[in-house]
Image (tube, rainbow, N blue to C red):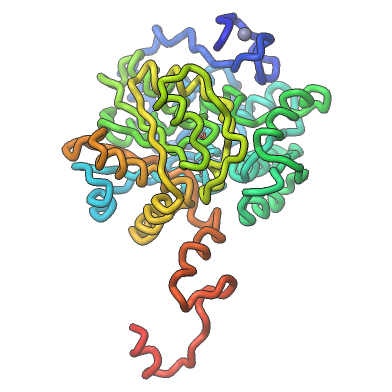
Amino acid sequence: MECGKESFDSRRPPFRCDCQGLLDVVHHNLSDVDADRLKHVFDSRLGERGTPFSGGVWRYKELIHPELPIDQIVTKYEGNTGLYESESLTSYAGVRKLWIKAQSENPSGSFKDNGMTVAVSHGRWLGYDNFACTSTGNTSSSMAMYAALSGSKSTVFLPSHGVSRNKALQTEAYGARLIRTEGGYDDGIRFLERHADEFGLYVCNSINPLRVEGQKSIAFELAHQLGWTLPDWLVVPGGALSNASAIGKGLLELHRTGFIDSVPRIAIVQAEGASPFHRMVAAKERSLIPEPRPATVASALNIGHPPNWPKAMRYVIEQSDGITVSVTDNEILEAKNRIDRSGIGCEPASAASLAGLRRLVSAGDVGPDETAACILTGNLLKDTDAIARSLKHEKRHGPDDVVPPIPLTPDVVRAML
Ligand SMILES: *Cc1c(COP(=O)(O)O)cnc(C)c1O
Ligand SMILES: [Zn+2]
């Protein structure tokens, strides 16, 4: 992305360019794409059970990884997630129409599956059998799941703090080797960038551009579900900024190939305690100043030096007129509470999207007559500590018990209804 060199060997592990810049996938066949024909193909795959094409990522293979042999695909039929409309959330956000795209319904419980199926399949194709990442917990759960599914090993560098217990346990349950490290997520990334080759590890962090290719399918599936028209705004939480970059890149490619007539705007929402990208964009700066001690209740957003910021800058801010906003932990937890009580449910990081949209409407950046889709990134059960913490103000909840027991008599029960 930095030096402009092309034709990087697609069979080498995709970490960084020799100039240290990020790698990006360029599809040279986009001008040959016949959108009308492919729309029919994508529709016809909706009913193809039991093949990789019935999943919500590989259905769009032609626009994601045309080269990969089908027998190399490692899939759990990820994607295919629900799209919801909720009156209470629409009025909470303050827009005319709001869709909630629940990537939280993915097989490992987060949108990381959309990208990870592509990264692990690609790595297997190159002959790797040990997959590695550093992670705040969702990347590692997803990677460990696909590695196990393909009969490979996985190795995870977990930061010393800020990882939800549920995510660490989920990762371990899938059989990953967990290495708990001193320092944070950003230190883990730097270590892997330097040493992965030496250890024969295939890195699945989001600097791997194949992850971004898979995550584009979130935009594809949303557009497909809405009949190839999209709302005015797509709202995404931003941590390492792979998801925002992927959605931006995906929308631009849909537009270039004639699938959609116009490119919706993207709003990236960061948590106030971990918002270096928002600060950079708001100050109209061109280089990112990392946040040395990121801190937010939204563990998946607790990243001080988002590696994909140049991609988010290019695809979201510059090429599709996107914007950024930050929200407080209280706003995140309040929005999470609303989403949970709407019956959809999510982990705190996901709720940043709704909190951000509400703030953008009240600031006048998004109009009350506009339409939007919030991307919910992770499942409610991913972070039960956060639920316990946000319910603690209700006196009857202790930190450990869910609800204390009562004598089961009609009088006691009646008094509680
Ligand atoms: C990874 C993750 C994010 C942040 O996505 P990035 O691509 O790192 O910006 C947000 N929410 C959840 C639940 C995540 O797992
Ligand atoms: Zn380069």
